[in-house]
Length: 433
Ligand code: FAD
Image (cartoon, rainbow, N blue to C red; front, side, top):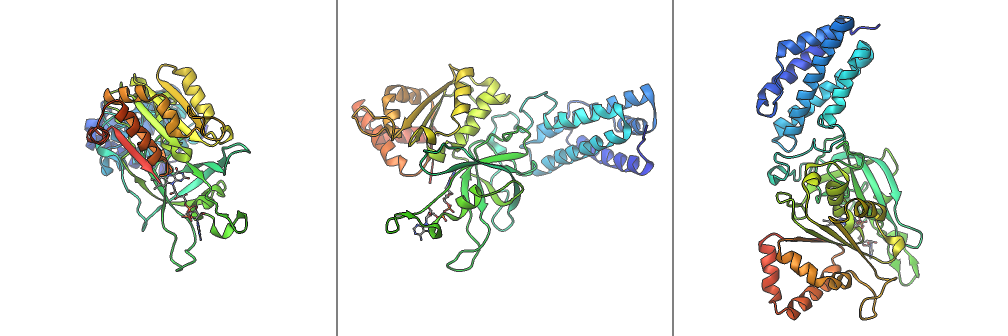
């Protein structure tokens, strides 16, 4: 059976010792104490001994990896040096993982522990990218990567997610950031499209896109993030056709990407759309038009799909209103149906299909018409502390505001004072573009 050679053992020792030093400095985060000499001895034994001695040594290393996982978990959202320490810990355990091939069967424990770090030693839980406590927003990352030094992400996949009769094309794009670009649900990434502007030869400016996955990404590893992008086209009234010379630069770049393509990214941006998770009985009312659905996909995955501390604690009701033109243009419908099936008391869904449904006055069913159908409930929930979110094209807001004003007046409320009250209590969240 192959053994680790002396040089590799030495390198491993050095790495382990440096991580243990980091672990000691992050002692507050490491409930599981393992002595430095204990671990280094274990590493030598795992490499050099045979049989039961090696097995025992590998077990100790597994415990070290578990402790480092705890540190990694505890430091997510902690100050940058602590975060770097946790990342270094993951790297060392990944190296340990590589020794599996060299050490043999027993080292499978290390590999398991390495995975444990990614999953925070919590089986298949999504709890390794949490603040402490999980609802504490004081460490939300903002603008870590800026225009002058953007992050390079790699496209994992780009898929059209609307049916043939949808108005326009919308794509779901998964981007690999290797865990180096953490974000929270409700934040956006900036994308700098390649090339230069025709008018002045300068690089294209950054465009923002709401992140459509939870912080754990669609694969729940914490290494990816997803975008929901509508391809911007320009309909020329003279040509009576799309004019490709005037199509949107960044959305077309993103919708045309292929797996492995590089994407220059900035951010994460914004704190307006975060969920206030401290009170798990908070109701959320999420109103979207089109790609405005993106942040809510992150919310719903966090609350109902993934095994997050926020999801496990959640006792409120999250109510999603989505407005699109027709049923072919619906976004992520299968995921909403799943959440509804699994959490009928906590997740609620209403669609406004403007070209397929009619409102109570016989006109097209726009998003404000659908919300108005439930105006009494919506107002009552807001009165009781619910948070309301609006995301999508900015053209949605005048209709929404007009509707809410009308309802408020019918109820004898002063609309401006009512709105001021919601804003003052941070219950009103708007991100429109
Ligand atoms: P641009 O190249 O900037 O062009 C803008 C528009 O002008 C296009 O419709 C284009 O067709 C048109 N145009 C171009 N040339 C001409 C011309 N000569 N004459 C007339 N018209 C012309 N978008 C999403 O799809 N998903 C999201 O989740 C999302 N989230 C956002 C979050 C925030 C906070 C913000 C601010 C914006 C968000 N957006 C989102 C919008 C996004 O940032 C871009 O604005 C959008 O993709 C269009 O960018 P573009 O580069 O494709 O178009």
